[in-house]
Length: 419
Ligand code: EPZ
Image (cartoon, helix red, strand yellow):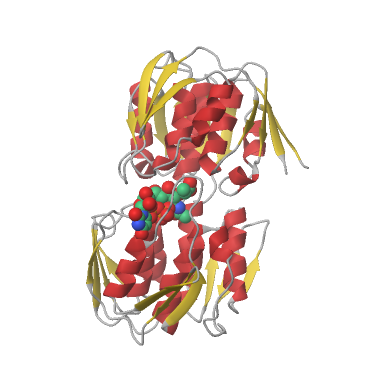
């Protein structure tokens, strides 16, 4: 298992290009199953999770071609085998469950192992299943699998008790080939959902209201192939923005959509960072003395939960008291124990963590427990005095393309040891 070694204290300079968004690409790849025509997705990030979902789609009988240099990914889901169970791939990665909507909508039936929970929470799928049932599907849970079937999905009105990103995506995809209109109320509004809707629309779907909380999908008979370039990764952008604050640097990020990172810009500006846009280049200056602030994660357009761990690394190095409240997941503080090994002063109190910022962290041997926790440890290592060794970096590779190469390009003293 690879390790990442960082010698903290370097300031960063220069410009880095942000990759395409993992959380947009995964549902878009799943959506290619809705058509028998070839779809071409440009600039796919070459991430573990992308390869997992492509392997899963291939195992169903689709043709999948990935150019790992350019990220160009072609999928032709013409010859899909019977909806046989595809083993426990979906336990490997929760996002695999996103193929349920397309498969049931196009073929009327699919069976897959129940997605497992993960380190950050139980990750239930009750809202996904509520949606499929509302569209007339039968749902059978047995021996750890879930089988969903319907002769024909019939459009209906569905209220999501929580604006779940995945449930919104799965139901939206299921509604594209359903009979009649599907209305999703209290729908999630994350930019990745808008990107999926744009891709589906290029395939011939009729979708409106994305981003408003109420999404309407008018079912069509058939969807055609489409070419598409997904949006940039707002969470990767936010991760690099925090690095500027932790290393007192002024850096540029290429490929940023300002609208997608408004909550991140708002909070970092509140702390004292200077942030400006020059077309799609974000210029961030983290060289000023920063102030402590409070953070509360919320569904979009609130502060993203996927930025909570990274923000905690920054607040750990800002003198004063900050409070971070995690409202989305029940167990997304596993980075705290690792940050404390580096000297951070954090006390967890239920869903909140109280941080007494200190002037300098100390390098230490730490472990990535999940994707964003791993990112927060890289950030802490960039700031810390001495050497930080991060193990279990496969978690980080699920969501960041060559993160150590990008930081090295900016001047960080960081290297990966392949083991
Ligand atoms: C997506 O996960 C993202 N993953 C997550 O990013 C992100 O943290 C999350 O949205 C929230 O923004 C992908 O897009 C692949 P949810 P998803 O359904 O769809 C509860 C990362 O780091 N819930 O919005 O699984 C659930 O328990 C990852 O890139 C139900 O109760 O998120 C959780 O508390 C981590 N019932 C909350 O909603 C359901 O049926 C958020 O889940 C579904 C969800």
